[in-house]
Length: 168
Image (cartoon, rainbow, N blue to C red; front, side, top):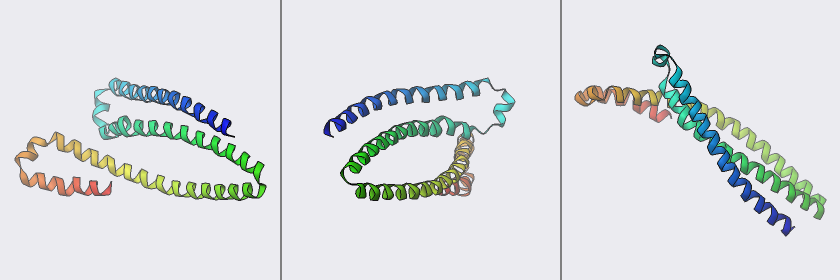
C-alpha cells in the first residue's frame, strides 16, 4: 500500500507540472483569440459593443478557466486516490466499504445541489458586475467633468457606482 501511495504522489507531482504548463498555453491562446477578434471588428460594431463584457472575458473568464483547469486536475487526482482507498477499504472490510461509499455518495449529491445554487448567484453577481464596469468606464470618460463639478461627481457616485458596488 505504501509503495502504491508513493507512486501516486510521484505521478501526481509530474502531472501537476504538465497541467500548469498546458493551462497557461490555453489561457494565452484564449486571450489572443479574443484580442484578435476585437481588432478585426468594424468601427461601428466596436462602438456598439459592451466593452466591460470584453474586459470581463479577458480577465475574469480566462482567470476562471485557469482556476478550473487546476481544479480539474485536483478533482481527477482526488478521485483516483479515493478509488484506491476504497479498493483497499473493501479488501479490509466490506461493511466499512459500504458505509463509506454511502457517505461519499450523499455528500456528492449535497455538493451538487449547493453548487447549483451558488452558480445561479454567481451569474447574477456577474451581470451586476458589468453594470459596475460600465459605471467605471463612464467615470474614466467623464473624469474631467466630474472633477470640475462636485455635485455631478456626488450624484454619479451615489446614483450609479455605490448602488452597483453593493449589488456585486
